[in-house]
Image 1 (cartoon, rainbow, N blue to C red):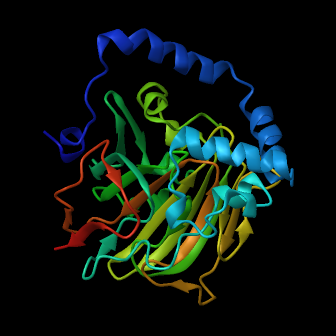
Image 2: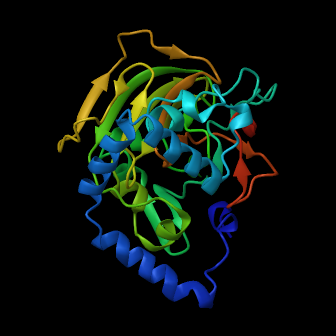
Image 3: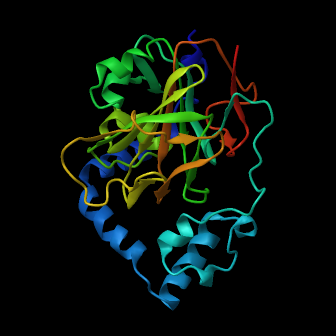
Length: 299
């Protein structure tokens, strides 16, 4: 059994099969682009008391822990986006000492393990290629054949800033337009090639063990994706692939530095090269994770 297969989530329960099918069918039918643009405008609006009321409802409904947020008072946020991308109090996410790779986000593990050839495991019965994920870049994808991946899902309640799993020098960034399916576990089980179909921002770094990639995957109602060196990448929803190169610049980030953020929840996919790697033994598909905890170590 492959490592990816060993980390597969449990099979769908028969009783929930029809409901999941209906949820997936709805995803295909929804006007996802229009819905995302409309809700993105609302999330960016300064609505005063109405904005505060929505934020308070969201906190109650999703169980957001405001004790670690800065500021803690929901009324202090001018827009829903400000609340959603809230920073955490200093020391709330300490980095695990000595870990080669730390978890870059708060969220849940969708899948992780070995890349088999160029195939990344999505869910039972579904794989997608490194080439497709990276927007058709075969030369870049070749670095990760037989390498390692981790797919991490950020739920609405989670902290939505993304941090560096290890130190890296930025080499390039690519924005790949695409669909805006939800990226929740039900959709991941039911939509083939989900993470290589959705809009995404591919960030390429040079690390101690060679090149590695962090992909921000968009989704329904994700207003925007931003990086610390560029700002909002997909604000106008362009329809063509855009690329930026940084090889002549010195954009370096340390382990744990913030590198980007989502406005509304989504997923990150990490790719690492074909080196010997030991994953955190506590990790398993579906488990909750926190930014800064040990993810893996090079052997």
